[in-house]
Length: 286
Image 1 (cartoon, rainbow, N blue to C red):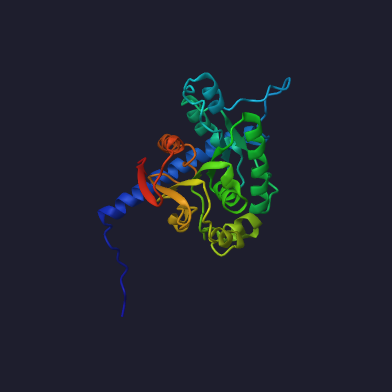
Image 2: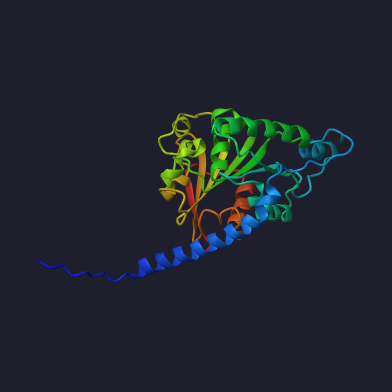
């Protein structure tokens, strides 16, 4: 019997998804091209302002109590630490950093971890040392952290496994594989990629109980993120963690740190003090 080839007419929903995926892919390619231009500028660590040693900083809260006045807008905000993803550097946060600065954030720190780093645990320990230095220098007791992709996983390990919840008030993750991603098996030759697999020791450690964790988690995940498999791996689902998962539609993995709608969502997340555990919202950027 001869079987003739045939096709099923695509349904409207499938056409809409295909069109959204094509637009998201085109945007990803454009962002990648722009990021390759900026990449060299972010290879070196961010410079600290030199000169004579400054007097010990006075925390805004203490200054407000001493003067009896409320702190000016933005003065009571903790420093924000920005942590990039795999084979990337701090240049990925150029747009987000400018957005935060325009809206009153005074202390913004973009960190690089070494491209030779082969262990998330080691990178998390380094992040902890940076956070302590930032707190000492700025006079703030706590910081907020924004991590893209692997950067969010490093920050979560610091918070959940190394006692970093004492220092981190809010951890915002962008396209972070919280339960591991199965994408790109050929890349598993790299130790960091193996640690991002669903069956890795690091992911298993993050599944362990964390009943006293004080950090609030806000995870942005995209329905068109081609590096998160499945896409919901970018959600925080741990029963002991205070977590808010925000669904983003219409963009891919690389667009998360640079899209204006996501930047607005990050600003809102950093400003919120009380968030119900396990809530879920959506942001459309299509």
